[in-house]
Image (cartoon, rainbow, N blue to C red; front, side, top):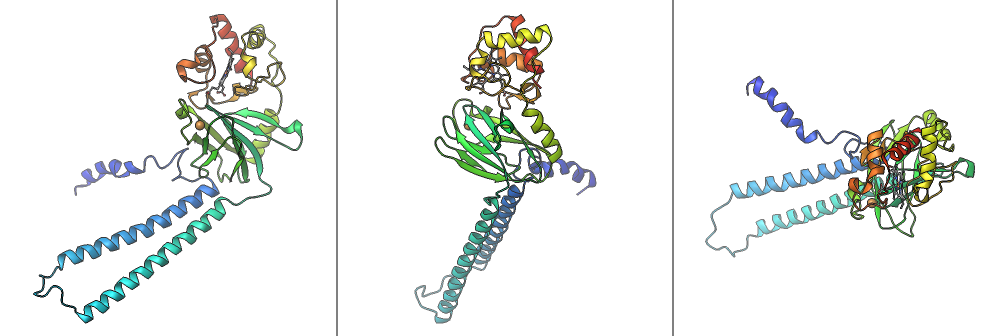
Length: 336
Ligand code: HEC
Ligand SMILES: [Cu+2]
């Protein structure tokens, strides 16, 4: 093949791999658990490929070496019968050994994936239609706080997530870190994972949970332990009150326009529980569970008409004047 043609083919040959890397891929594992899952997958894949190839080769040999039918097709050939008996017995035994072997591989993989570490950092994650409540619960209430749609964890430390649902069944899935686990009303499920490398990994609800299921994403930020400690101390603090007039107006409107009925901003009178905690909304990277990237424009678009962006979601459209909208955006953006 001419070199130029070969070069031209390279992009096409690598195309199937294009989706394998990145921040949401089980084929690019960044956690101890996802690594084990991928290893198990490879072992199964290789064994299955070898068996399949062997079957096809034998089939082809059989087809090519076909003999013409004998005069007496029903006549017994002792020698042949004995050999085929041995072959069938051998292959049956091989099947048994392979299935048993794969079961052991799978069992060993599960033991690692579902291993429990007592010193794991524990988070409670509650699925809502269609966003994620994230609770950091410490023995001391002064160190406990709530956030939403973004999870920050230290690298190298096991993290245990306790999964619950406020309404229907959801499923917590961060392919880069570990496998899926359902969030079920009235039941507490657990999942543990350890991020090996710092980075941002995308998670997604993996159980159809209604109209906006597809817009129920989240991000896991794996930070170095130092960086995580700093973030945690900051996130634990209440919101700082604005000092400028526009910010003050926004804070007051947040209560006057009913936002506070559904949203909590710690350190203010806003204590609603129906929607995400907005104490540090200004430092989040997305709006409405990963639906839009965070900016003044997207924040404004969301507050002005959440039903346009995520039809059917549980935040109603509130009539606001443009001046009021600007004050609200200004206030919320300050909540870093
Ligand atoms: C009836 C309850 C309710 C009211 C009132 C309400 N919200 Fe919400 N809000 C929600 C819910 C529920 C969500 C999550 C929607 C989703 O992502 O599916 C939300 C999401 C948000 C978000 C995005 C949060 C994030 O983490 O991405 C912002 C910002 C927000 N609301 C601001 C406001 C403001 C400002 C007001 C007042 C004008 C307001 N909300 C009024 C229920 C409410
Ligand atoms: Cu869901």
